[in-house]
Length: 180
Image (cartoon, helix red, strand yellow):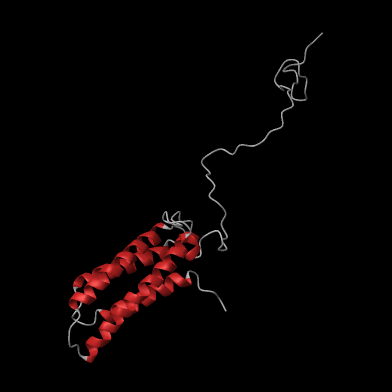
């Protein structure tokens, strides 16, 4: 069986896509619900396409965190008091989408750290251990290496200057043969 590349990110995308589509079938949600969910799905697609960068995942994580608050406000303010069976279904899908958001935040956070994101603890001690990105978690990447700085190498010192006139090494050949 072949493995699907970026399966957790694709599963997150399709789960939110289906739940968002089912949620907006009711007429009770505001249009803003459609807008921020559409932006979230577009950013997830960008993260699937650009699989080497952690920037789209960070943007999706921030928007997903903001969407938790926006979903709570939308459901609390606009939910009908006596919905029909169709309305109950759309309310249930909106609530399931809201419940899935913290799980997708954890998934986005882990994938972002796998891609080399530098936001492994957000300044909170041991936060990375809870999400599987700390020192106790298995990681295939080592510490960050700055490739812009030259590498300092230890060179043994032999106190011989190969370019001094007293040194007659193999590289000190006369420029022209001297004639007697």
